[in-house]
Length: 263
Image (tube, rainbow, N blue to C red; front, side, top):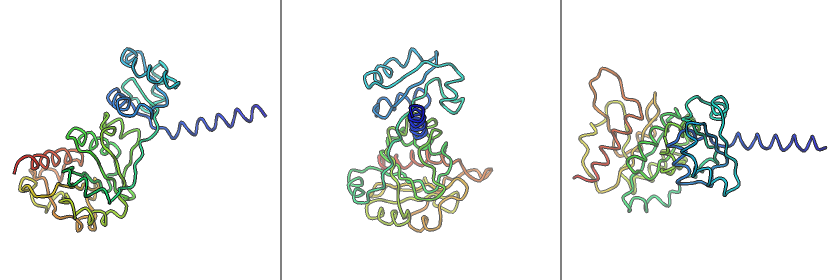
């Protein structure tokens, strides 16, 4: 009976661990402890970073949660990657609530821009976009209900380097319908590799912008394009077809952010 009980406890522990997010790298782990230390369940670090994690360990000690100095092989196993930066936190995932359409008008009145992702499938791109959004101070990102849409993951947290802790994530249901509702309060700007108006031709409007980015290979679906107020393109040399979506996000957010400051 004791062995069966121990076995059940072991299975429960492994199941709980599988549900935890692996947040790797000092920037991401630091952002996690700065914003939501209660989500951290365990901390692992190597000799290189041991002098940098004292405050994190003290936080966990107060909460009676474990932390350990481990060797390179074990840290790689815990991280699930060699790209761990010497420290890995196992943390409860950040909730991604359904977008509350009733709050949209209030965000718009406060002049808060929105970034919406419709089918961004690569978690590395999601992480890079979240890092860019945090850099420019965007308060939130809306993820579509598209089947290929990436969500928060070990990889996206690693690439975001803390950005996902400073940007709210929401899930938009019936995405084209959501955009139609947004147009009551926002200037909804879709993106395309070509056939849109050049981004530098945009002029400041009365409404804050809601920028919509599409899938890395297929772009925005037709239903999404039709639900936008306007479509923009980043002009290029023509030598390559398009930019990576994360690079496009950085350019577009910078240009659109400048429109808020300059007529």
